[in-house]
Length: 373
Length: 86
Ligand SMILES: Cc1cc2nc3c(=O)[nH]c(=O)nc-3n(C[C@H](O)[C@H](O)[C@H](O)COP(=O)(O)OP(=O)(O)OC[C@H]3O[C@@H](n4cnc5c(N)ncnc54)[C@H](O)[C@@H]3O)c2cc1C
Image (cartoon, rainbow over all chains, first blue to last red; front, side, top):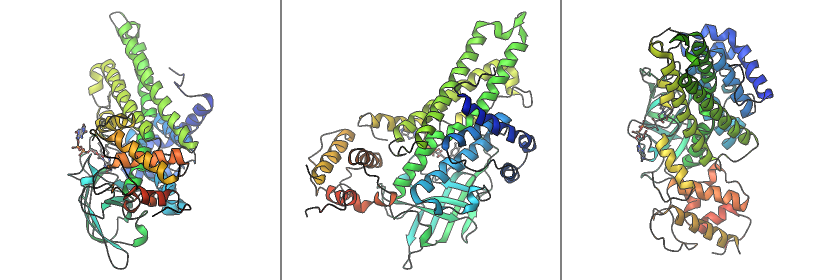
């Protein structure tokens, strides 16, 4: 299928322009380590936030359509919209060094711990204020995307005892500071092109000006970073989905079973139509919320809709992948077959950026149910 | 209605919506944090409602314990120009 489902002409032009720019790079990327791949994308100006969220998502969809691996599309979406945007929106342009914008410096978002996963208020990492206003940071953050390669981390740490909502404070931590160690990259199966690891902080000195906001303002920033993620992070999948849809349509047209093209069987055609619907809905939701962010709607007031978007798109991506996997037959399970299914990436969407079940609680709370998470 | 009364009513309404049992009336000086009346979703819901009803935007640095101690403290953060009766 050539019709771009759910894209108007102007947006499709932007996606195609990015695809064209990314095509020569995409070929160099397979098998490259993260830093090499990142540099190659940066050299073509493909890491820079193009000012509007809509253009950013269109650029990332273009990269995905050009064949840039899904893990890199994910990493870029998360850099631009999961960390950079919310930080700038909350704390002003000067909060991040210029080299972040070009992609020279890589950020990571360090919230999760081995014990505090979906319950961040139970975290142990702590920052203790010293007389000169600086902080001493101790603890361990685990399962952090890009931790093995990042230069700076947005770290949430407790500045007070207890699980109360104002116990957390955000910091921007230099990862080459004394007392910071990184683990080896974990053997991550989902989105493997971007590594994941843990960060350990032992008596790390954090200057006063690296506290982001005020003591206790972790909740406010966290609400913003997670709402941004829930709004548009799944946008990383739009390009990869379009590619899978295209190759599935070709396969169903070209492969003959029972003496006719597979796609002449109604159940096969029905699965392809289901895939198209999933992609259509996903584009509508992600670009729709991107437009509202560009219109200046408060991210906090969008938190409920961000949760709805994240749940919906991630569930659609899983359903989409199941159809593609079924239609690919055995080739779905063979590396290099041309129809190899990518299963872990879509399923990981159930868990990151707030497990879907916890987001359901957020949604129900917005509706007025007295449910606790 | 004064800002203080509007805010008191807003906070009480959001807390009532979020609670699974009956809630005592919220007064301007009812301690909100130590009583565990506010969890993180309730706090952010209050912030959202303030932004909608009062047409102000609260910065991250204002969404901190000192301003959520009670409704009076919150009122000082939301409408600092208005003298809040002590
Ligand atoms: C690909 C990927 C990238 C990630 N990148 C980052 C990153 O960059 N930075 C970062 O900080 N973290 C990151 N994470 C970690 C992620 O944020 C956590 O996995 C998530 O918060 C859930 O924590 P957990 O895995 O410990 O699950 P747990 O808290 O152990 O929960 C497991 C499951 O139990 C269920 N559950 C638990 N409690 C409840 C409840 N109260 N109500 C309903 N259901 C419940 C949910 O289904 C949940 O998925 C990443 C995760 C993945 C998969």
